[in-house]
View 1 (cartoon, protein in one colour):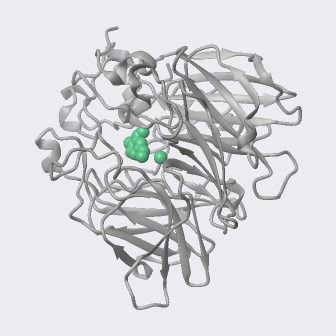
View 2: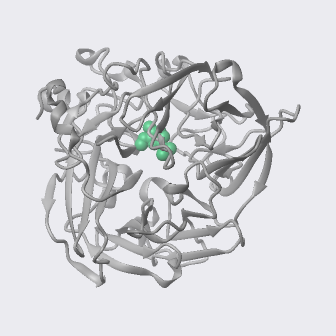
Length: 498
Ligand code: V55
Ligand code: FE
């Protein structure tokens, strides 16, 4: 197959297409802790076929799911594409049928009305189901043991009526609930949002429908003990853009940002909206509330972070304005002010914030993220990096002391988003490991790194050589122990599988 000769399809960023099962991967430095027992699931966009439109953005590739299973000091890997409707229809045709990112007007006529989701953004396990997620479509339910696709359009037994489900649901570790939302929930480019509360058993218990101030990419959100928090940032889209053949989204610096705060037990009438001058923020590190004061922590930049979704006013991409720093947005529900107070939390520039997920919605002391350390030598082949993000450093920020602890991966590598792995038996925040894929660009290969989460600067405690190149991924999560195989008893809903 001939993929385009463009930066997003060549060199380290060439499609991979490897589906595999490899046992007992070589540990090339350090040791895997013998008591580590669990799975790291992650997903990367990896296009099955050359794009219809001649070129494409990284965000539009088909979701390739990887599982690293750790047990008894060993690790094995499985990798399989999610069998979305898009994947299955294109495989049957033998070529691409779906066109540009979130633009159905560019599709082959034979797939009009089909779900366009690629399941390429996040993989979470809840109530025994592995859900591969793309924010424009329903979850893809996969078997957490075999990575087989069980239902490409999982709607929680028919109770999810939204067209979409976020790629960033949050699991409340205290209650076992999964909190989630969908945007463009009543159709592409609509302002309709729905918030879902999903029980530990995986049933939708509550839904709240409301409208956001303007249509935009609602990529992530925050949860606290008492509230959920939605940030509206002007990465805007419209049918006019799609008809004009523009990218679905563009950054409109002419619009303010908004922050919507909804009581977890409240209804649409209880949402309170706050606002601030324009800025850019996508992923949420964490949020918490102290009484009626709500804190929401995000990597924040003054300008557009996505060069592939250009500014709507035609301004060129500005890498300085795109540099994000962790910032606390604070609002007080008792106050009459609609303002959002912004407080810088750290000097590191970067993105992909994570926490010890046992503290989701609670006041966390530590945050981990990818960072760009521009003081270090950079010798990446071609002088560029995965999708424009040159992340050569892992950082830990300590919100109590203000200190940072960093690991620089070296001049010829970059890093993918880490996940926190609790040490077996631990309960203290941060007691555990960070797991992270290293892109070894000089050798066109990959390693899996395990670091002491509270001592990054010491370097990896284990480095695992991977037998093939991992494509640049988005998000992943650690799931302790044997992953429940509850999937099997539900096979009646199965669509034909490839
Ligand atoms: C993101 C990634 C997506 C997407 C929307 O910010 C937002 C990340 C991989 O796809 O569709
Ligand atoms: Fe994301």
